[in-house]
Length: 294
Image 1 (tube, rainbow, N blue to C red):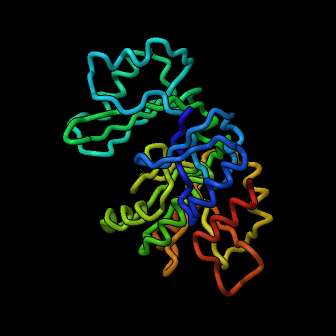
Image 2 (image 1 turned 180 degrees about the vertical axis):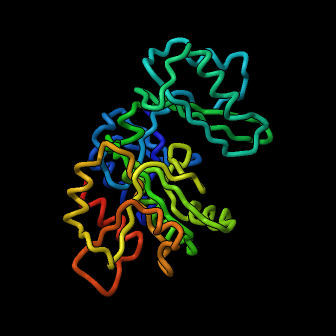
């Protein structure tokens, strides 16, 4: 069996990793083919939880020329209860991702799911100006090794007038990790700033992430200030009584805080920590709050 190994994006030594795998799978062979390919007859579950490996993708069909008249035949004998299709183009080919997904779904006759039993991953490439594809059929446990069942908090995070991409990056990461929508309010055009932050905040699947720009605030609006009379104990009591209602946690930028206009619209304001002189950075405050209520 052949597997495409998707490696985590941290510093690692491939030769050391190969030796670790060989220690578990003594028949392991490796070669590079637009990624690291492992060939073994042993049970690949033995290496699934190596920290260096993000995904294990069992090869179903190796490189073959594109012939869409025969393409559907790849799925004839597959018994898949639910699936999700991922497509990657390693070269520029005049085919759309949507058309490929449509062909696969048609061949499998539905059962398309965003939380599937099986992922179908297809890569396309040009070799000597001829388009080829290869296909991987991947069990969910190989695709997302540590998929978390995220608790859905009835919260929306609001960041007003950010001026720094690092600040936006921090909020993007926290909101993604805790499965929270992020609403950025600004009286300027900050599209470029947001796009730069998104590019640098790697690893976030933005197609599954809720990011709103200047969305009207609905529900309870809560702010945080070292000058507030109510403290974090009061906040926890308030949250526990109101957690079934829609709550906006509202933060200003790290230079000036909230504008007077938005501050006046808050329903409640709370003080965090015992510090009374130096406030937390906005992203630190959000992390602190999520620690209090999670």
